[in-house]
Length: 464
Image (cartoon, rainbow, N blue to C red):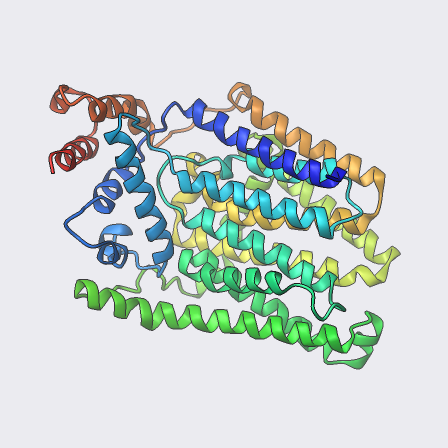
């Protein structure tokens, strides 16, 4: 076993340890206020699974988003929670979230080990460990799998596309890479609207690259051969096909399934954001910069925003210097700028549609996970292009800071803020106790009504 492989395997094992320690720290997890309903819906054995999955009235509060793949994963999670509870192991963990995080880390390490030869192994490990320790990735309480699934797709698309670009002269290289890329692009729209946005961005980037490469001077300047052009055309067709599939699924296939299985047409009201969301830069910028600063510093409000802004300024300065010194790195700089611009646009639309995500108790959650997955790739790309041991050490120091603040987060002082899940977090131990001990009368316990209905529903399934 070579040194880089040893570091990769060790990183995956340490990430697994982070998952285990996080789960132990959560002490069984808490039941999210919405999950009290979802757990009952997904464990309704009177309905076939496909009817539940294709029923946004009960799986998404009638906010149709054509993300049935995530509902299927949620259903498996919910049924596993009930199955564990029947055997006395009562918890509210999303085992799929844990598995998806480890899959993301495994994909990162696989490609970092093979396709980023200039990066020292310790830096490759720090990329994945900082990702695994980030609060947006450690949401292991059962709620929704949409964002973790999108993060998995974003990881696969980013690194698989880079491998195809890196090995553009190898005609036979990358059959499995093409399969991974295609699977991620076609499945992402079924996981979440962020996944559909990811697919559209990939297709758009391919379109821009093909337009630029149509000029002979550009092909000559960056040594774009006929083989590379064929791969670029294939990637563009794959991305365009995924966008078309996602649109057809959203507009035709999923509504037809909902109509066939449940007898109604879904409402597109939630998806109709309007043009105003595109220019929602204040909220979108706040979301992006605050999360970026929080990832490194685990501070809140002005400190997080300022930290994020500082890191963005340094990033812009870095690429400006690199392109000035080595103009052939302009495509990498443009790719990085395009990705960040796409993240800002996505944040604009999300925060316009769902302003609740800007609350301090929601802001640093799973909404940022797909963006962080792309940022891991962009950081590796920057380090690979820098070709500087000093840059590697500085970046490693920043990532170690992120890991340290993640570990010390409970002890970092911050201004208090309202947690809209506090009641459910505080009463979840009683809910778990009532699900485990059938002799307890849940009506006498000080728990929310929806938690009471969850306990009653669980007990009713035990009597069947």
